[in-house]
Length: 167
Length: 157
Image 1 (tube, rainbow over the protein chains, first blue to last red):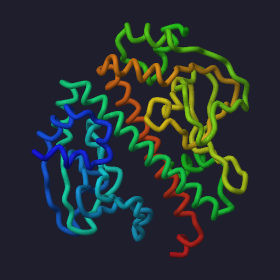
Image 2 (image 1 turned 60 degrees about the horizontal axis):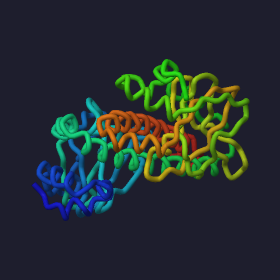
Image 3 (image 1 turned 135 degrees about the vertical axis):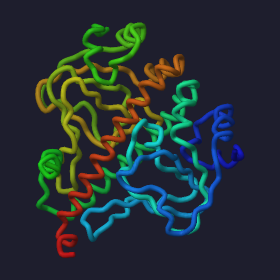
Image 4 (image 1 turned 120 degrees about the vertical axis):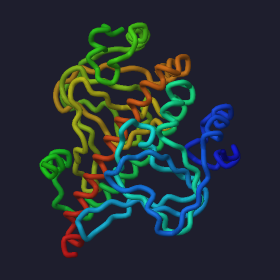
């Protein structure tokens, strides 16, 4: 159980009505993780949703065996990994605490049970999760644009070059 | 008004209860557009959600050098313009018809009202939105990492 005031500090929950925050508060747990703790490992099953109260978390992904790219720095008030709300999800990235972190967690499995019983809760959570994905997607588009602007040899059909690149 | 059987062919709407199709059919319109028609532009606030019945849509953006870069291609049965269902309705990219295309349009604010009247439907459809956005976000991240790995300075490492 955590305080509702703590949940109100989480950006993703800003639009969730108070009576639904009370349900989340009963399910949530507060944890402290040390610097260097790997909270999420790429390609591993995701069973927990994390909301950062204090500290900083790096979201990273490997581009070659020798190079990791940090895609995001998660700061206080931000949250990850909403994939916990999608059944049978695996992690798309690795998340590591860059300093001691105070984190509110929600069990993905328990939330999926609650969503089946309370569709209002499920709707508002999904609405906010989709808003978060959209922000990330917009950010990625900006990152692609910036990288490509510095590389004049880029193919105009990124989709096809990406498809052929992953084959 | 759009025929219910046409709506049922859209992946975004399949598995919904029959009465919901009646409601959505009343909100939806269908139209055919010529190749090259811009459905919306980058940063535009979207008022409608679109579903492709036939044809092909390119999701793209213009680089500073004036090149149109194709990020994604939408094929029949698929949905685009889902920002119309969100709090921030602005689009991160443009959408244009790559060929003559028949498209269903549904007003985003009417869909949101429907979701708030029936949270079960709202839950089912917003979960689909989340899955669609997750898959596009992951694809864009992979595209970004691919473009980064091809960057001359990274290649030197």
